[in-house]
Image (cartoon, chains in turn green, yellow):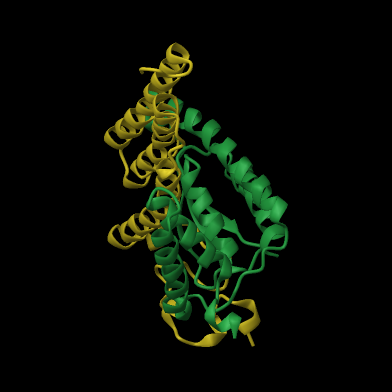
Length: 163
Length: 138
């Protein structure tokens, strides 16, 4: 019964909190509207997200977020250097193929989003069977090393989180 | 900054963060202007949304903390929405570019028996055998 009413309990919580924060603080009205949205929206979108992902290692989620934030800061400076001080012809831009070990769609989406948000790489496509990502790198002198870094830093942790 | 705690230091901190954020946004826009190919240009805007906007949002949070003594959380929501929407729009732009430039011969092969989802018509095949979910595979 409860699982039918709340197909994604964490999404319900997140939507309610986001609404309360948007309303600039908890009041009776904002909590009620937030709860209504938090219950109705997951029900309406359930056909697009039928299964519930299992978060196996909550501590790794925090670790993952910190690693990504750190990489964003470092990579921003690197890419700023590339744009400001390198001639475009010197950039070794290329497509990379990242073979995926994980089969969980939520993990693949998170990985693709992370790759795009860390500057210097943009995820462009996924293979039709969902087992490889097409990534464009702004400057990758060693494509194999770049792919290995993505797999080691991000996919390994996502495998721990989502299995 | 009247009645603020740490008036001088706070002002300095907010200024440094605003300048740093603006710097990264300018560099991102400069990259968009200067880089020759579409795929390279796509890297500029994804940078501006991370550290550039991030610096300005932290500056905004500190400003309200120092001047009004309250914690402003709208900035965190802006960060959340940006992190959710920026990869999707970048992905859509890249996909549209792959189609328009007909890059199916130029991108590297998937290393899988099927092609990239943008080009392989099998991707839109409703056949459940091709579902992403491993537990639905035969």
